[in-house]
Length: 150
Image (cartoon, rainbow, N blue to C red; front, side):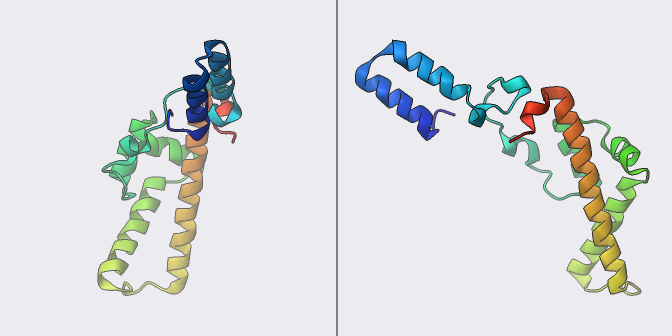
């Protein structure tokens, strides 16, 4: 957070005039601005370390998604997603990944049509929507609505 240009400017000003009476209010005003409000009710917290969450779980397999969302405080994942979707989301994801892997390594799977592939793409788009809804509800519940609004 200290490498933000606006914060750096405030520190430079303080280094130049050593006026603590203006330094602290300027810093407080900046940190209270909407740019820095991304947590519960605008509380300022350390920068979100994204790498800590997705390291080692980039491929969207069910196992990796479970691990990723457990790190974010959502466990169990697939029962929540299936409740939103009213269908087995883990199976949709597994089916999509199986076809994707086969196509990547062997070409077009035998017996699969272009229509089948379009259907799987639509299914995975729905899965992304279900994940978004689940994560949105989790974030609103745990940190408040201010965190989601940009």
